[in-house]
Amino acid sequence: MSFGIFIHRPDSIYDDRPAERYQFPPQYLGRAEGCIDDWIVYYEPVNVAQSRGYFAMAKVEQIVPDPKAQGMFLALIQPGSYLDFANLVAFSSKDGVVERGLLNEDGKISGRAQAAVRPLSVNDFNRIVGQGLREDAPILPRIGDAVSMPGLREEQTPFTFEQTRERIAYLSSRVVRDRVFRRTVLRAYGERCAVTGLHLINGGGRAEVDAAHIRPVEQNGPDIVGNGLALSGTAHWMFDRGLISLSDSLEILVSSRVNDHEGVRALINKKGYAHPPGRHVERPHPHFLAWHRENCFKP
Image (cartoon, rainbow, N blue to C red; front, side):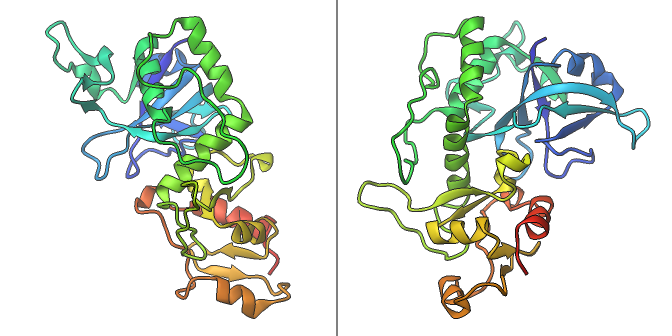
């Protein structure tokens, strides 16, 4: 078992759904199998417009032949393990490349950087995850006490293998994952409620919006930005109870069961469409929106 890097891009020709599966050709089978029961980091190449760099982590559950594509394979992601990084991690900075294992003996980037599936050292994994989840300037929760995240700041004594496992166990905590998910979603939406359009910061510097899962965690909804919405408290309450929903084009749908239809319409922004994230790749995914309309929304 070992850590790994999976290269993914939003315009990929492969049948990827990062929170669920990763498709790859046979030349990467051995490397992918080495990641079974361990964690991988998703990386988006620098030649992608608005590249997210290293943007998420997930655990590989198993590798199977793709039943729909002869000669291809699927890395199946363990349900509930996917987690978007709160901070996007660039391929390189003033300190050099973050994935040091790509450097050759001369200190230059080797051909390994082109491999779509490649191993990742423990130190590089710690460095990437540490930067992706550090809280130098956290978006504080709207209610409740802040949760400290020991061991996740960039300036650290390098983690040993056992400490890395402790970090992974810590990140499996629902409290911690909710906190990271909130920061990620609020970053994507600029801390603005998608339904009302309001951008409210209270006196303590806290954003008065929640991060709502479109498909709830209890219903196998992943902690991925495409399964999230930034919503004010009232909008969140209505969304969870199926009184409002979204079409695939992000039109805000209002249930006929709402007892104050005019009041709800007055709450919604004048355009009648949810404000989307700046990056197209972070928009609500139609797969999750369809689930909400079919399972929660009350027409």
